[in-house]
Image (cartoon, rainbow, N blue to C red; front, side, top):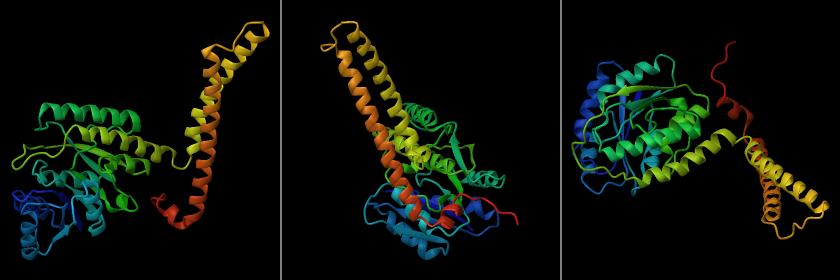
Length: 312
């Protein structure tokens, strides 16, 4: 089965057309599919439209959240209810083209675990395209996972990619990064992007600032979650080494009879040495917390998330 998860907020005018386009794209494959609509606290008539679709169609699942929790929470709710071996996500505003879904699935069949769309020709205002380019470049530079359009809403996943993955805050933007850090194979293909037909965009430039902080969190958790001492210890040793060299230099000046008590360099050297020791201590404490957590996790369950295949 293929599960198509559709997070939405106030998209009553596009829902019926969206389902019809999804159905046309997937029925040609001859595989069973379901469409999981997640209403993220809409205040228009979206829920009435979804209720009607649910009553008329057996493969429509509707999830109604109590209030607007954000796209990440809506996607997480949809992932938990999806029954398919393959999960596709698509935005409800009709800018993502459902006709591209078979291409995503074909790319999955080549052996990839996650396929992300790349809106090569975006039908968005210039300012939004500019912010998006900057955001994608920064994401690649910080995370090491280079995609042209990491935040594209049109993606296809094998279900195991989503097992155990917690999406909250603004982390839905970085699902490919999280998946890559867990060892899954990531691909990207160009997809068609259409102009918005109904309503207006609810995203502003401030989301990229929030996204940057989430990027730092994702990168830290992905690269250093199981070895925090490598990060904090490395920073601490570097700062401590610089501070130590400064203090040795000042000590030599003192031996040669020069006054060092009023030099700002003395304060800097002591500060760097003390802060460096604190960073190393923080790394050791983090290692202790990490090791205790690893001991509490069932070893078989932990290894199952790491092993791709066993040949006997």
